[in-house]
Length: 562
Image (cartoon, rainbow, N blue to C red; front, side):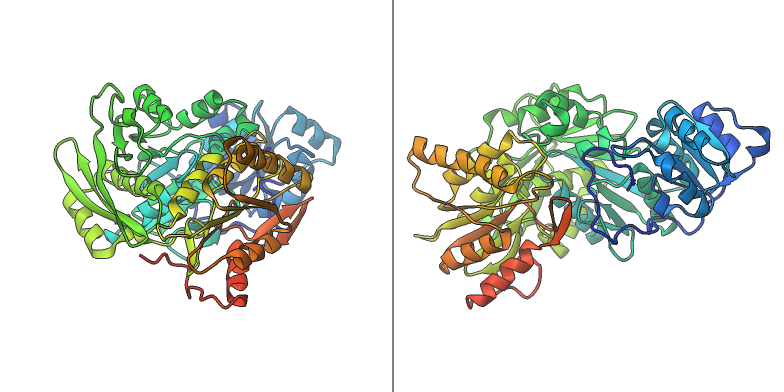
């Protein structure tokens, strides 16, 4: 992560900046002359043979032999940290004209400096060159990338679990953690910087991994964090309003997602065609595309009748979810192919959206060349789609049912509230949520209205206010909730409780054993950012403590019971 952040990147809590744990143990040196040729910059003859064995955007993570890339930032230019990078062993610096001017003002540097107009645009290409992350001469892991507004994390976990059930050695790059066949590495961004992504892919190759799955956010595409990466299969979940603070319009948001579905970035695509955006993407992508319809009429899964119609010029999707029915907290269903192939599938995670996530994960693995019979054997033997995904429909207790979920936009909140509604007579749904500061403000009233429509008790609290006034954010959410209640004569209770731990305790105090508590918005996150300060706050811990204090029994692990 860069010291001079792009807009939208998250600052780590103090003390988390450290040397990268992502790199392979051995990297064959690339001469600086070769790097110069790659970016079209002449390198003085005396510097052509300088050996480069790594690349970094952050002076704090520079290692000996690195190319330090000094980028412009919101507050300071990365060139201001060049001396620190060189002290740590940087063998050369790559920057822009503004950075070169800053370096010229200081003392003479002991390393060569390459100047390009837009250094960010070449970082991915150079990272791939230096780490040989996807070198045609070196067999690396098959790479699955998942994008969309909701469901990215769970789908990548499902892919990972299914591949492991099939005997593959796997890696994962995502919001919650990064796995490279060893101990988890905490993740601070949905997708790390391109320097780290390519280092990770090289590390996975070095460790002999067979496959890896990666979340790819719109921020990752916009900020070029996946430049130079070629996915074997990319998958699309859905598109709903989110991140309009970055993209401005839904059209621009869609176009950013669609950039992943090009020949430059992937070899094949799987597109869920349950919404109009998915159907458009399936029709427009230049990649070989497999279509998937997951929402079925009469299933209670909020079907779109057009979802199973035309997509990419076809009258019937390549794969379709059929016959979904409840099983425990989850769902069992059949995934049926156009050629008549059928697979029996189960997910232990609650919610119609997890049927969609499981079906997409399965279809992506099939699109990657897996044999359906081998896949069915793995599904039967290990039930991989019941894997616990931290902070995603994570069950903390059963009476009352208490769930922590990452739902932080209108569509995800609606799906989560619908998923947790109990058929038990007289049971209530109690929701605690807020809205993130310095993010798409337009969704705040609609989130409030959605909660009022679908919950019995709405507790509006704080999410991550960042540098915004927390009370003002809550007020926008409350307006949406109270307006909907009055206009639609909704029978719900709406209260404002803060700070968030107090709101969670209030939810538990209001709950009877037959009720359901949903703590939405933050999921797995353990820090709450308020006015530049990171406060320790884990919804799961607070919920467990509140339940225990009231004498309720909490689950002993983080698994999802089914």
